[in-house]
Structures are given as C-alpha cells and as structure tokens.
Image 1 (cartoon, rainbow, N blue to C red):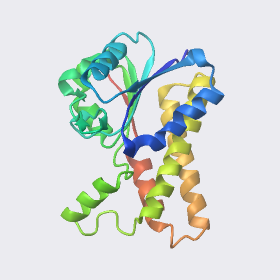
Image 2 (image 1 turned 90 degrees about the vertical axis):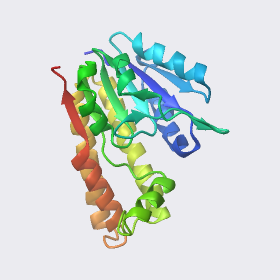
Image 3 (image 1 turned 90 degrees about the horizontal axis):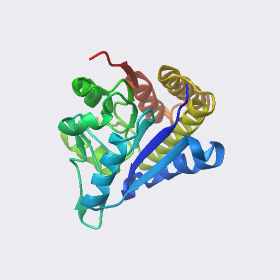
Image 4 (image 1 turned 45 degrees about the horizontal axis):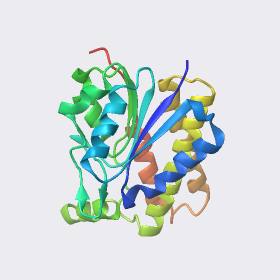
Length: 225
C-alpha cells in the first residue's frame, strides 16, 4: 500500500508544538511520500486547503490542529479565528479518502460524518494540550483534569508528538494499513504509561491517566456508508 500523506496544518500558536511531527517526517520519510499545507490565517488559504484535500486522490489526509465533535478548526492568529473550517457540511472533501484527525473529539466528529463517505479514518477523543480548554473544563467541573499541572500538560504534549511522529513514520515507510497505524498509537501509548508508572508513579499519575484516556478513545473506523 502506497501511503502518501497530505498534511493540513492550520497556523495557531497553541499547536506550534506539532511542528515537530512535520520536521521529523521531513528528516525520516522520502519527500515524495508527503506534502505539507500550512494554512495561513485568512479565508483564501483555507479555501485552497479544502481544494487540495478534495483533489488529493489516493493520498491519506492528515489533519493537525484543534477541533470538536462538530468541526475541525482552522487557523487562529492576529485576530483571525476560523472555527468552521471543516464542518459536517464540508466533510465531503474527504469522500473516498483515508483520514487521520489529530484533534480533540475527532472520533465523535468522524462518527457523525460517516454519511460524507470517507473510506477509513482514525480519530481521537480528549487531548488536553491547550491550557484554555483545561481552564474552561475546570470552570464547569472542579475535578476536570484533576492534578494535571502545566508541567504535566507539557509532558503530555511531548508524549503525544513522539507517539504520533514515530507511528506516522512507520505507517509511511512500512506501507502499513490504517488499522495498524491505530494499533501503533495504542502500543506506544501503553509503553509511555508503563514508563511513568515505574518512574515517580504518584507525581505522574495525572499524566498517566490522560494518556490512558487517549489510548482508550483513539478509534479506527472503516466506513461502509
């Protein structure tokens, strides 16, 4: 299987840490096997990105950014904020394509969007990487992300990047299936959790819990719609 990947990467200061994923791919994957679309903070850039996704052919589309159960968010910079980048109505850009959505609650979005006709997908549940989202959650529930300090959020972000970049590299270089990619995410997350359990287990418990939740919520979907 030829796993050529088109990466959609909206510009947002809170997702700059995901740059390491694209940098690692550049250093470890043949340049012909992936292309990167950095989406600048303007409407024209978002429209061009949608067009590239729709015209991607057999390429897998990888989204790196923020999202919710109702949409993938676009860029947020200099007063520009596009939270309706790829809504359910626009999800047909992924028709007959394989997709990986590295964004919060993308598993729920993928379930709701099955009628749009994507072929296969991997989505995630909660990914606590943005202090604003964590703060908002705690305003509604004082026990939300209990014990997850700013330091542990940074560790979670580092773990997420390493899990994604190594798994993507294996996926592309070894021509793996999308279900095997999902298995790699689970395997590498398990290894991270085991490491934290054997190294300062109590202090790292909130981080281990966040990773455990990520592992339990990552989802491979084969769409028969």
